[in-house]
Image (cartoon, rainbow, N blue to C red; front, side):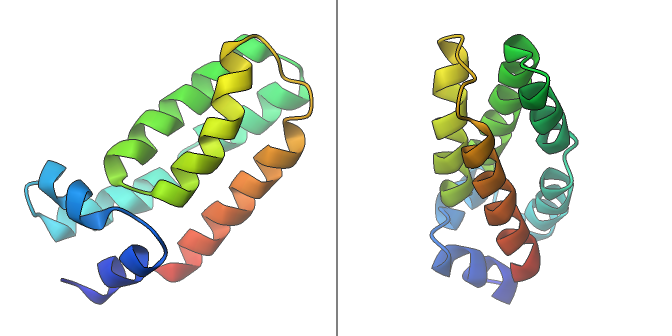
Length: 113
């Protein structure tokens, strides 16, 4: 297994499960990883939260959650779940702090690879 994937695994990611979904194609996984870390839904989520647009925030967060789950990025997924579930219930109160934590986690993961 490539060093980058080992680092993600050590950071709590389900790389073994993700690679099964990626047919063991480590190169393709890493290409997708770069795209996911740059996904504009991260910024769209923040903009929607600041504008109190719950529907748009939910759409961004839910889209990210699905992709992040498929990538096996468990720590990012867990943080997203803290944002998606209140939005699903129509509430956006107090979500800017968990959103900032999400961005911090994403930045940590960007530095891993």
